[in-house]
Amino acid sequence: MLIECFSSQGWASAGSLLTTREYMELRSEYADDALFRATVNMGRYRFGQGEYRYFTYPLPPTVDRLRQRLYAELAPLANAWNQMLRLPTEYPSTLEEFLAACHALVQTRPTPLLLRYGVGDYNCLHQDLFGALAFPFQVVVSLSEPGEEFAGGELILVEQRPRAQSMAQALLPKKGEGIVFANRYCPRRGASGFHRVNMRHGVSPVTAGERFTLGVILHDAA
Image 1: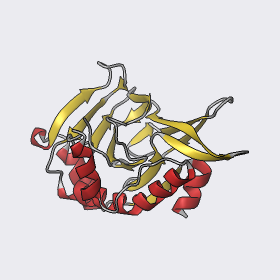
Image 2: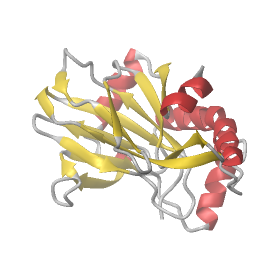
Image 3: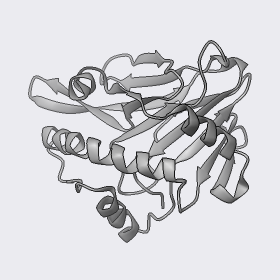
């Protein structure tokens, strides 16, 4: 099912990835400075409005376990995509091996992050690449319940179609639910085989409440 969803739309729901205890624990950890290597004010860099924090190593156990599990499940699909697109990169079967390849390219900074949005906050369309070696998928996990804890704040996925107007999708995952999506490009079948279409993602303005999200990026940053 995951492969079918990716083939048709470039994203898929991974279902519930966190227990109630885990997502409440992660939300509370946002205030613990010792867990993070950097805090980014999006308005300062014109990335949007709001704030996010990158975890430092060692990652919290919940985040580390989830990152390893997601990589192992997604690596075969990433390799299948590269075969479709005739790309040479082959992703190893474990996150440990993949991160060793990142670190050999001096991509050593951890990239999982927590994001916090208040009323009026948003995230501009972007791609999270961070270096020469990037895994083609990433995952966002909602830590807040839409309609109860916040309004607005949809996850926006945009497919930039060649010689055509872009197509956007707006998603509101439930608390604890993960959305897996293509963070750079997605294969599309054309008259002469598969070709790449660029993908970008962002978050629409929050109109009420507060929205917390866990972002699980699988490559490290330079």
